[in-house]
Image (cartoon, rainbow, N blue to C red):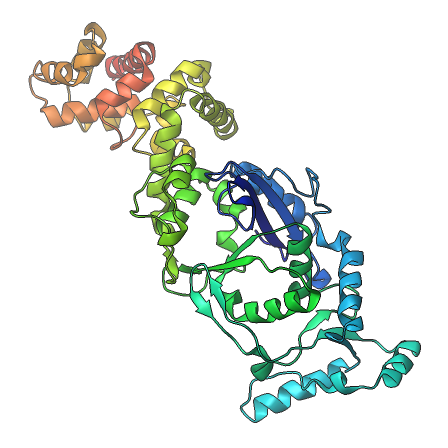
Length: 486
């Protein structure tokens, strides 16, 4: 999704141990049958993309995981858009200042830039020098009265307690020794990630936070903020990152990984979910073709490893092929595929369709059942290799003549034969033996030419079954007439 918005997924589950509310849950309905909550983090106003929030919800609905509570749907712990929760963040920031755990910082962007450049020049890690932490109350008030632009920084302390991560085990980072005091409220009145997520997780009663492993080092800082506010922190689980096949980080800046791109290219949501979970951990075994109910039942947090997962998108067509076959075989989903393909056929071949029967539900169903397991997306059926299914092919007498001088005889045999579906391949072999000077291979090439105008593709028998007796007859009548006129 090409958006600067952070997305937060929450699962609410009732268990014998009490209410469990998980931020960023892989599935909306787990083994505990919970509620899926979507929170959109839009506090970085400089990176907002118009329509991004709507796009996120659209894509979740397309993927088959619509949230139960969200900006669009509402809910009991809203608002679900962080830009609509500014009063809550400002109130919490003031609380931190009043308790001495945060302070106003009046350092200009120019001074901060100089600090950064000097650190880089001397080979040090850039960090704020905490200068404004030491301002006296009178100095602070004077600057506030003068309207000097400012931010609010959290006062990092030493003595961070170790915490046990669900995935990485015991961790401890003395952030005060390596970092400057972090900004929690920006000059524009919007919170940073550090403050907004802590506030929201508290008021949304989040018990477990699952997020990328890059945030592991920041968790000690967040725990200091929980302690300063007197709040009970959630349990944290940091998940291994999803990487490109070459080991580079998967990024939203790669235009071809946006969900809309996969949707446009004909990928099925269940195939995307399957390949993503298949390349990672959390399962005792990996196998292709798992549907969401199987993923839920087989998933175990204890099986998650700390190793990054390599996502090989070149395998997506294979995953898509398997899940497309599932849909074709599903009595409820197959009609949806048929309607989708009908619309695509009409759009692609509007002026070329000679027989409207190719748009009939039974005809398209027959095609899908014969091609399932062979195609990776419906779009393949619109390529030139399959155009014969929707448009009658054209071929010349010269093409026929290069194959055989018995075209008229062969066409007559086909039209006389009552080719039975259950023994079609056997009957075609018998038919080919009734020619005088044409080998079996050339007979098949002629039949393929008359049926599709192509030199390769599905078997001749499958073409005949897909097209149906009436259309097969029509196409060989054309071959017969062409042969007679020649």
